[in-house]
Length: 356
Image 1: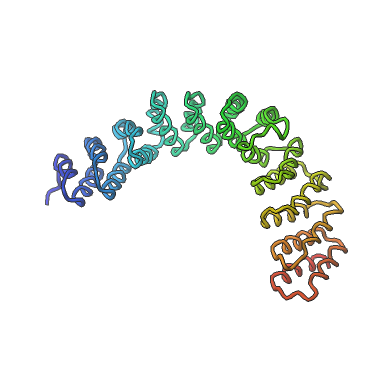
Image 2: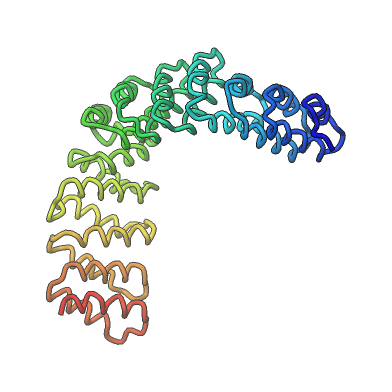
């Protein structure tokens, strides 16, 4: 059988047979019929079969060239999420070839086209795509601003940290400020640190909605100036961000290179261990404090040498093993007496062998 021409294939796109429509879409792409791009997109809008719609998108992904880009971009504002997402995928596969057209679409008066153009540029993910995303830091729509800031962080475009620092200080939108914080946690500089300290001079100045993002920033960029704020969070009885608080403390301590924990932090952590937080978080704290040389730490760890709570007992054993003095060794030997739990016994033997 002779191969069908373009007119026949376009006609088959409207066949009553699902398979015929699908084969027609595949053949248009396989034969490279640029003139078939428009008919494929038009059919996509009215096609009732999910299977055929997926074949059409898949076929368009295999095509390339300026004709494809020009005809697909208008569909970014489709009300049909399947079509819209499919077109984002098609355009992102064009890579650098789609950059200029997307730059132009970011000037569209339609905020949705600008948003979906940003999504496409992010998927392209090149340095030039990131630089075009940066132009949207002036977008009049706050949701597009939030998208641009998030994407610049995820693409790690450090050259844009200055405008983001300024945006963070200037905006009154809490969600945008949170997004700036999380992006500054990735690409931030000394000016970012100064901006955060200016925005949050004390614990009371951090709104509930901003605490999570603030902690992410502190975990990556924070220093001793933030310790008092973190201690205030430790003392807050209804905090739900236990892991984020611990990460922030670890980040500060790692960059500060203490041999001993500051007294006020150790006191707060000891009280935190007695609060009703998750046991996995308590386990993490036991390991965290065992890296430091305060004399009180061994006593704190010994409180959790209770085989009835295996997880905390394991954390205490591991922590005591890191302390490595005679008193620590005696505590482990005492715990071992009469113990039948093989996992706990094995965890005790490892530090005991090191402390011989």
